[in-house]
Length: 414
Image 1 (cartoon, rainbow, N blue to C red):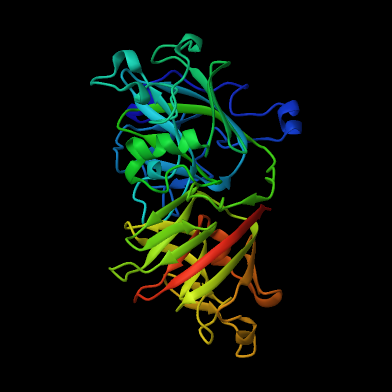
Image 2 (spheres, rainbow, N blue to C red; image 1 turned 90 degrees about the vertical axis):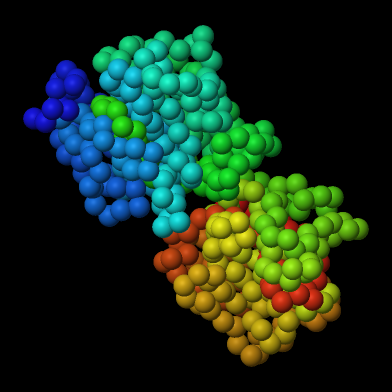
């Protein structure tokens, strides 16, 4: 047994790291078998190399992690769930449980993508603390009700639970609900954009992701980690553009996005660079119709499952909107492969020049279909698209001279 193994009394018990028959019937699953690290690996990795191990029926963080390393994640991604676990810290200890964590090479740490239930021995923590950093918070976002928090001291076991049910979030501590909020509301976005996450554009937007444990430089111990998945509830049909302003959208770049006479316009600015108008929320599986009219040039597009990188760069897949002869309705990958599905010469004739056109885009798992003015254009099944998730975004191509009007952006969540 390593030195870290002597930090806590044994976890071994016939009741620990097992499920009752009733729990099995309800759909609970263990994320830790009490004996091995099976099902866990490094964040952004394929194997487990971070300083975690199993000691006496507990997953233990050795305490050698830091802000930039020490994170382990589940093999599987989860969307809606109840997640329960027991935890115990050393004196002044700091750790956390994160969810909806997204893994991409662009992200060096998980907390810029996934929300965190903070675990902290507040009475003995060395250093100044903001309220949003303390035990039980939705880190840097929502605070718990302190009057409901009954905490066992360091070295003793506590139980926590996160409920994420189609945007409704609850934090529980030792059998008491201490916090609840609704994700992706105006209030949620206001908090996200005005605090710690103001420079983390993709924080908290993912609808699904891996579960993550944090070694923040202090030994921590976990047991009875179990999860029950909850069903996805499709939302009602919605208008992505309200015809009045750009509420629900975020602009990237210096190109022009504005509303005039109930229409949404994109227009090249003086810099003549790429520009994007992205939904502030993620949409993974959906059926979207948009109407567009190319008033000048018309080199634009509709990105799906895209994310923002380096201020103006958008990574994802673009359904092309372009002048005749340039592939409207085809699919272009903005990084890596370029064109992955192109239309035929005959299909080019479905584009109405100087008039309103209707584009339909249906995304389900790894399949994407497009229609232009009622005509089927692309039916593509692609594993890489299937693994993606992100925003819907409209594009202005670089080069200048572009002006496109948009209306009736209607989305049904699948």
